[in-house]
Length: 510
Image (cartoon, rainbow, N blue to C red; front, side, top):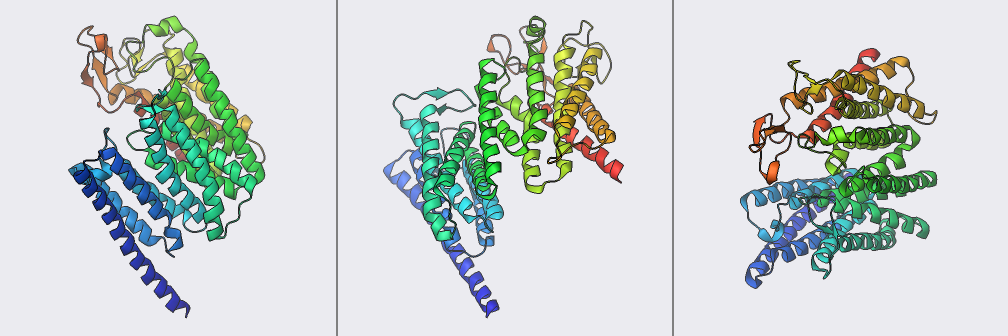
């Protein structure tokens, strides 16, 4: 009898899958037909498709038994959407005033949520899909139609305060409704206090995830960020929820002060808030100490020798306040490793986390102290003298500064460990991570000298990392790859730190 029921469930699921597939195609086709006949703006029909598709797929846990038909559906529509963008058909679904891959990110986030949440956390899945479908659309609609928009100069795309507020308020209401209505249908009972608490934290996180998005990536960042916060709030202890909320407040303070003292611009502050909430709220003191040390000490070093560093402004791609790209390039790998540690609880991930931060600390300290050297730098490749500020140029002071930075960062990581958290347990582990950070900093210099894009200005005839120079004139490429800038090099630097630590740990453990 059980085998018969299973066979019937499988048949029913695939039949429902076929109906869903047809329904989605009909929905897209109708939207395209209406757009052409009524001459509606593309943005209007795209949002209708966005909302209706999200609401439709959010109902799947109530009609399907297995997740696999949905994963197949997501894969099919990912490929379908990608081809639609490439070949410019079904404009009602994907056409926008800006370049966007939102319709591709949409099914990708759907696949990830189904795969992770279907077995045991369907309430989180449903709620996250509704946030993506309704709250994200509300942010766009309000942001575009408000009569007196207040711009938020945070990312590369236009966002407004009103749109972000609409995102937060809509998310808050969706969480409350979903927990009450769909929670009852799924047999999940959530108290009013936890419901409101979850709604507030999720609303904040969803809004900031949307505001830093670009090219439609909000269809990925918003549902994944919302899903993680909801999962955390519903599965962790009251103490863990409290620490997460305290981490959020602490991250807000750090981001706000950094913006006030011009360590970060607006985009960098928002990125720091997101990264800080993850690290402070999940990792507690063991993970918080090292990343705070990196940020605070590196920010202080950036202010030393300001007059001398100002002379190199025409050379460096980015100077002054750190932007969103720099924050994510330096701390993004560390943030991912904290999330991995949360799910897998493996102490090796803590060592890799320290390795990534030791690497970017070595690179940052080497640069900030190296430019203060009175001696001309030499190329890390040819060892010939090069002009100050040249990518791949190193000095004795800068090299020692890189080693010191890695040592200080790992020392703070050692001191931050407690008996209830990951910790460095031997001098050998300590030395491996310090060495990994220093070597990764050298790899950063090597990449800067070989593959990072280098340009020269046709007006002043000077070499620079910038694509736009004197009088807003485009520069000419001299060497390296056009797409590899300083942020990309920093990402690889953090990855090298991870790989060197992993290799060292595996070597000593056999």
